[in-house]
Amino acid sequence: MGSIDSTHYFVRTYGDLLFDLCQEILNNSLQAQFAFRSILRKIRHHNRFQKYSHFERSWVLRIACDKLIHLSHQNSIPKLEENESITARLKQLPSYFQRLLPEDQILLLLRDKHKIPYPEIATAMAIPEGSLKIRRQLALRTLEEWIWNSK
Amino acid sequence: MNCFEWSNHSSDYLDGTLSKSTQDQADEHLKVCPDCTERLQHYRFIVSSISHQAKSPLPASLQKTPFTILLPHIDRATFHSSPLERIPWYIRTILEAIGIVLAVLLAISSTPKIKALYEKSLEKNLNDFHENLNVTEPIADLTHSNIPALDEKLPTLSTDPASPLGESEISGEGEEEEDKIHVAGSQLWRFTLKTVSPDEVRPQVVQSLTELGVSPQTPGLGGTQVPGGIEFTLILNQSLIPHIKHTLEHLAPHSEGKTAESPGSENFSWYRVKSKHKLPEGKSQVVIWLSQPHG
Image (cartoon, rainbow over all chains, first blue to last red; front, side, top):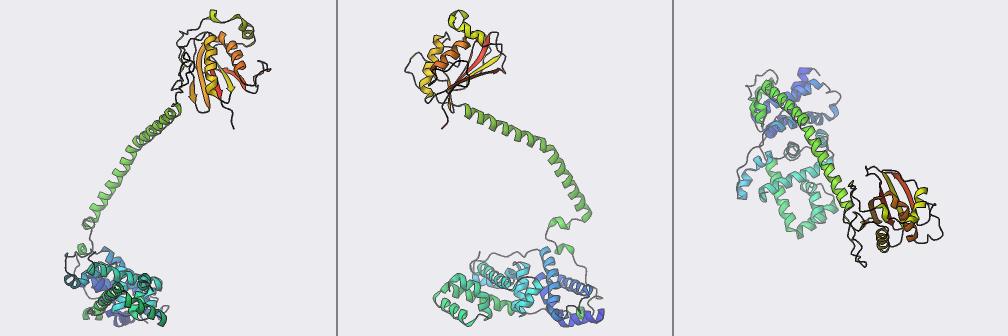
């Protein structure tokens, strides 16, 4: 598969998934476009498509995760308005979500938004499957405490 | 299943991937635990919110020409949260270099002070240790009212030549032994007398010394309580030493029948060394050590 063809193939196959991840994690359209492009460039530079073709999505996601975690650590955490009522805090759920660790955000997005199975997420994030489940439960509990218990 | 176990299985419970038996146990627990039931509802709400978020589609321009499309200039400041990172790199590098140099200079300049403080504290600790070691408890043994009390601190050697002793006060019997034991200047004589109860022997020693002509005002005549016994440190006339030796030998228990020339006898021994202190002419340092035998 040629370089241009392979790039278009990845864009067609994983473009929406990758761009949505970029958009959700970075929370900025322009930054998401830059991040998407740098992920594609990294995929193209690796040029190991044939080698990893059996678990292609995991490989693509792994590159994306590494890049997004690196970029998101440079981003500032959004400030939250203090609200007494749970209803108001529920409306701010996306902002609370942004306050989670990037790894936890990626995990919840891949698992609950894009319905990617645990083994693939485990490969992408280089975390054992059991640890992923515990991590997901802790992330949910953190969100719950922020919203319902206002901690 | 308890709350902790349910919490550990909550992720699988939400996905519905628990085994049949574990699922039943989790359901049973949720029936009786309102807290976990409420938590499960919260989790489901969060998961549902995340899964129903609108997906951001890839912009068409980026889809067609992902690398050739020109993206608008991005403000690097939006990427960085730290104000320091917004400073141009050349100024930041200079600032960091100056900071490192200042830190090194500060470390170099403060090292001797820190060392001096450390040595001072060590010295202070050592002095405290010595002071604590020298603290003694006076014994209120004064069955003989004329016996001086024990000193509270180890006596320091005085080079004051004004000793109360005079040659004329020594009995003539000791002259023979004085010849046998050669007494030179600046000497330290140490007599060790082993006794089960140094407190009982102490008045006898003091009395004997007084009878030999040592003035009751002589510094150190009362003896000093130290760990393991009582110690007398005195500056006396050299001519007194044979008499002291003879007297102490008689005071030592089970020493009858032993000769004075055998310094290694059972309960009494003596030796002589050069004193580190400068003593007046004709004087010697005498240390009498009433020690309790070990064990």
